[in-house]
Length: 637
Ligand SMILES: *[C@@H]1O[C@H](CO)[C@@H](O)[C@H](O)[C@H]1NC(C)=O
Ligand SMILES: *[C@@H]1O[C@H](CO)[C@@H](O)[C@H](O)[C@H]1NC(C)=O
Ligand SMILES: *[C@@H]1O[C@H](CO)[C@@H](O)[C@H](O)[C@H]1NC(C)=O
Image 1 (cartoon, protein in one colour):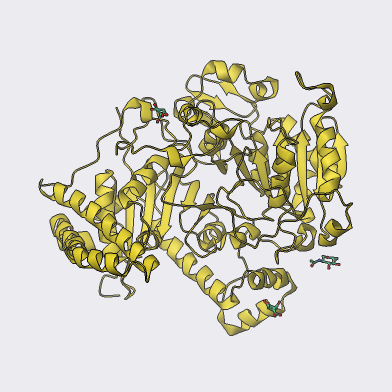
Image 2 (tube, protein in one colour):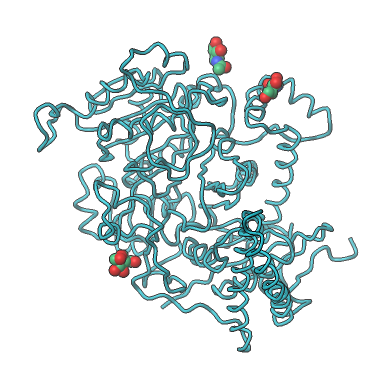
């Protein structure tokens, strides 16, 4: 290796050269614009879609151009101003006051409503005064800085007996474990109780029953999820937006998978047949209202043979309800369960457990008055209104969870391609029969999948080695150099903003990184979300022209592979996307953007505007693909 296989674009072009290059490109687009605009008016009746799309790109380019031009007048790139203190914990799209004013009610006002978002001042969100970088995993799972979450001592103390026992507020820390460092025994007992109801000897056997992914509705302080993670399961916490004492914020601060999501009026942004278990312990949802549509939503996201666990104070009358309603929620859910082919499998103390049928013929054998089947395809709903019918029954993904208990989906271990022999072995190995079935069901070629797996393994090695402040120094690190010493690459919560098959996630697991990934599939990308969820990973559908349903500073690393190229055909502004990325990234967190050279140059200018340190990396693989590695600064007050 005589020639350096790495060089930095920025050092060749220089910052100003770079800016002028971008301005040149954007200016060209803008200069050509009037022509297209006229032809659009003339031919709009003939091919409206092509031209209106093009016009949108052009308009956005013009806006971005004006913005860039205005900043080129100064000598340096103009940074966005810092937001005021009121935006510290701001989550867009959840303005309850505004929603009530707009006439929303019956819980709908607590839902996500991005349509009422006004044009906000573009500014960079600052951390609270006493914000501290979270502790490393797994210590950070048990101890968090109280200044990082919006929670008051009073909220902690008034939050119920179970939760207060779990938490000790020390000087500036919240501790979630008992003195001996073990997770509070109550959670263990509870998990064992659920395992017994399923017919298992202990909670370590969940995997043998095919249970890996758990949708945990209203996760409290995340202790159940933390326990499931220790059992190598994948719990995903969802809870409604809460201005203070947020369950989602706490879970993410502890490094546990979570996002804002709720059961009021819209479907969750997951495909049908996604989770092995749905869990609700004192989650506050009244399951039998709205023609049982909430329960039908649980049924939709449950895989065949999956479980619904409901823990609630049973046999207690509900306060002000009429006499007919004075039965426990579990009893009422149980009445409904028969209509949707669920069977009550266990009941102990406050906990009820139902199993969804694994037999799709069950539905046709129900009585006449039962709930109808939906006539949908396999598309993933994006905050679609709840539906009064049963979903997923005709899906090709109707595979009972018990049928894949022998398959480890945690990692792609064994998917190495060491020549053709191994590849052939794959086809004949029993272990991968199910894997191949799921590839086939998703219309994916095994070769395509395996190649993608391989690409991301080597990509991750490069990424990881670059995640060190050294990359911005005069003697920057090169891709592939030895891993930096802690705490530089302290990464637990990762978001893959354009996740495709989830292979960055599987590469992280294969390389033994203690990270979890929120795999995001953009609405206008290929619908690979079912594959991601079937692999047992966390995944969600999202429109990147809208804010992501999470709290500020909740991710340690954001990864955007070809996302900017994908979004260039959208109306939304990349500047707003960068501000949103900055909002959800914690101080000193990392962004890795992989895209084509021209796009990366644009991204670099935007990264400067949100004050990230950024460096363009050429992997010298002969392609015009470049990396932009960025770190968000810790803006102290
Ligand atoms: C919420 O909406 C109200 C009414 O539209 C508005 O006055 C208020 O500023 C909004 N709050 C935030 C945080 O955007
Ligand atoms: C699941 O396994 C059972 C028993 O092994 C088998 O009879 C059934 O056909 C399988 N179902 C599917 C959908 O593969
Ligand atoms: C894959 O799916 C196609 C139809 O979608 C089917 O004809 C074929 O037999 C399947 N192959 C395997 C190995 O399951």
